[in-house]
Length: 200
Image (cartoon, rainbow, N blue to C red; front, side, top):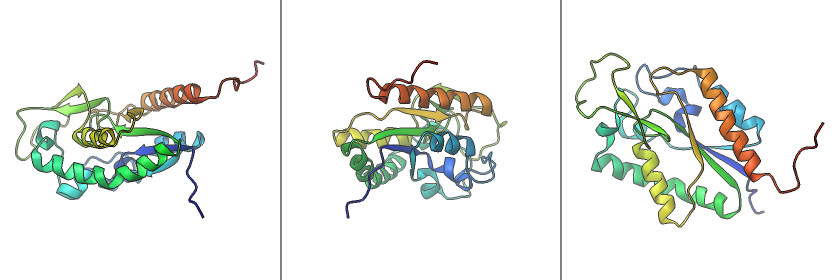
């Protein structure tokens, strides 16, 4: 029997479905980030959890870090290996015609999509106040390497957004509205011509 390929697939940053993967003191939910899961399930998405490169690289006892600390040859090689392992599944969905989206973790040095964290002078054991880093536009290291692997395979860029969990202070209501807007725009763009809802 040929496996069923879902029509809508959401690639999800690992820690959005497993808060135990977060750095020390980084978890904000008891298990998973339920507002993200609920929003996707309501719209009919199947969820594909991405691997956590930081957890596999540095373990559960790691501290928080910024983009510059993970932007190393060794960590990028690690991310490339993970990307090469997960890319065939993503490619299968795309080539089968599925709608594929990516939900990352804005502010993360690894899984940031729209924003990542930056502090070029950070090094060693963290001893600064919680919010003493900069949030700058850009991808995290893991997302950069994953997208590079998909590009190498000749695949289109996947529409992406991020949940603002690592932005310093997370406004859940604003993050929920932001995610809903992204998903609703996707739904409108992919709706077949002539399938508009009837006016009241």
